[in-house]
Every structure is written in structure tokens, then in C-alpha cells.
Image (cartoon, rainbow, N blue to C red; front, top):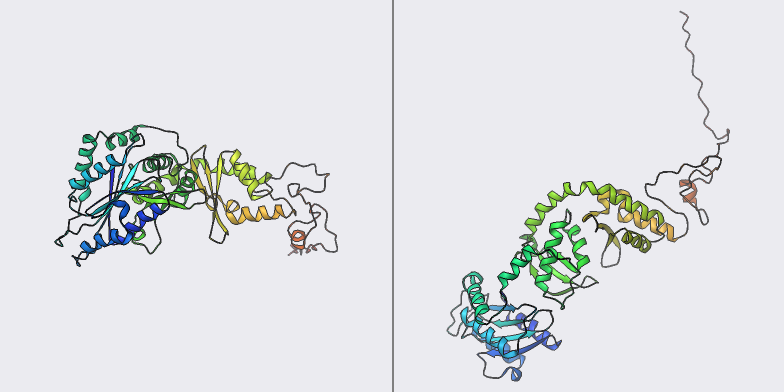
Length: 415
């Protein structure tokens, strides 16, 4: 069993989170403590009023909301009564036996888990201290409950993560134990792939439906160097709730990642030219951006296209899955940037001419007047093309337009 405790300042926010899950058919209120009615008879206002009534008895304490979850192994199956007993025993051991609380069973993830909403303000207005409650009270309670109820022990699972080497697959939200699978995927990627920025790390993580997020630049999390991991869908939409980097088994925090960024700058250098060769080969054959992406995929290279909310493409990243290395297009060179690739794709799709990036000119029989064979014209020639690529670049220039040679004055050496 894994217990997660979150404290906050919004009782209505914690309650709304669970009630919205109930409305969506993804959660069920299975039990309550300290209420005069049965769970099914309570209205939203009655659930909230009981908690707010206590919270308002201590106006000095702003952090008056406790929202926790108990998470169980995938192999464990529970009835409502057993989950209720586990919740009651846990709340008793952390000092919330006489507090009102609501227990919700969530069914939107692959592993069984429950959420509990309560307040840390007691009837006489005193505050239950939440300082270091995880280590001082929650951990002993968790370990004791695992033994008393015969649950799978979380410590044995973390040891398996450290020693096991699994072939990772994209994370499907609701199909597996989210935190466990996210930890396995993040651990494998941060250990095996060579990336030098958070954007490059996300280029790989996104392939496995995970995103590392620092929050907005104005947020406290960003300023303090925090990091969350989200499960995302195929469109990049965030699902469920974020997992703190520090709570993931291998603790891939921003500080740890920044150390990896510096190291990976050197480790990825030997793979740069090989990746450029694969890209050159693909762009020489591609007739559109989607065709370019398909050709790269055949070389086991994933093209990650970054675009803004308006759909404008502003960046490309290349993930070489064979060599486990990531490069932004601009890091490879100007010809591999988003602007250059998009320009090439647009010119090709317009049917004007083909452009090959950094391809050497072939050895051509010079009896053939067109020595610029790689540039194949398939349509009308515009003025710009006329200037950039003359129709007959190998032909001689008429003498009347040629530059006249200036005669050198011979010095008279006879003194």
C-alpha cells in the first residue's frame, strides 16, 4: 500500500475533485465518518458544511484541508467493506479517528485506490499538526496495515523496480498502476537516453504518454525548481493528477536532471554525424513533411514536431531510438532546423523543385550541360528560381556581357 497526503487551503476544491469524479462515473462515495446520515443520503452542501463548520473554529489556521489517497497493488481485489475498514484503521493511526471524513473509491485507474477528504481542525478549534506527518505517522500506519490486512508491501515493490529491467511500452492511463509504470518508464529513459534539456527529455517521454512539467514561469513550483510528471493522451492532454518528481521511486528531480544535461552534452557527440546522415537520406527522398516523418521512422528515428496553440511549427527534435540519443534540429545545424525543413517540404509540395540538404554533387558526364542534377525542375520557373538556379549554369557567358580584363602596365626596368 502507498499512502499520499496532501494538505491545502480549499475544502471545497478537494470535495469538488471527488464529487466531479462521482458525476463522471469514475468514483463512488463508499463511507463517511462523523456525519449523521448515510453516504447516499448526504447532499453536497451537507458534506461541505460539516467540514467547514470545524475549519471556521480556527480562523488563524489557513491550511485546514487534508486530501489523501491510499493506493493498492494491481493484484489486490477489495470489497467495499474491506476498503472502509482499511480507511478507518489508517485514519485512526494518523490521529484522525474523531474527525469527519469522506471516503471515495476511484475506478479511473488500473490499480485499486481510495481518496479521503477531511479537515485537521478539531471540534474545540485546536489544530492537528501536519508537520512531517508522512514520516512520523503515515509510514508506521501504512506498514502496520500492510501486515494486519495481508496487503502487498510497497517496500518490496520498490526493490523490484531497482533490480528489474523491463521493456517499456507507452503508458495507458487507467489500464495499469499509474505511479508504478510512470516510475519504471521515467527511470529507464533518464538512465538510457542522452538528452540535454527538459524539452529534449519530453521529446522522448511524450512517446510514452508522459510529460515533465515545471509549471508556468510565474508559479511557485517553477521559481523553486519543482517538477511534476503527468500522464498525457495522444493529443498531449494531461490526465489524472500530477506526480511530484521527489515522490517517484528514483527521484528524477530537476536538480538531478540538470546534472544529466551537462554529462549528456559529451556522451551524445559521437552519435551526431550518424543521425545527420539518416536525416539527409530521408530529406533527399521526402516529398512532404509527413513523408519525411515516415522515412525517418523507417530508420528508427522519431520526429517530434513542436507547435504553438495556433498550429505554427516552431521546432523539431529528432529521437534516435536505436542509439537512444536526442537532438534538437538547431543543434544539428541550420539545415536541420524547423524553418529549413518546412521550407524544403513546402517547395517540394508546390512542385517547383527538389532540394537536397548537404548532398554532394554527383560525378556527372560534363557533356550533359546540366551539372546541377540534384535540382530537378518539374514546373514553371519563377524569377526567384531564375536568380538562384540559372537554367544553363555551365554555359559560356557572351563576351559582350563578360568582364573585361584590365591590362597590366609593364614597368620599364631600364634605368
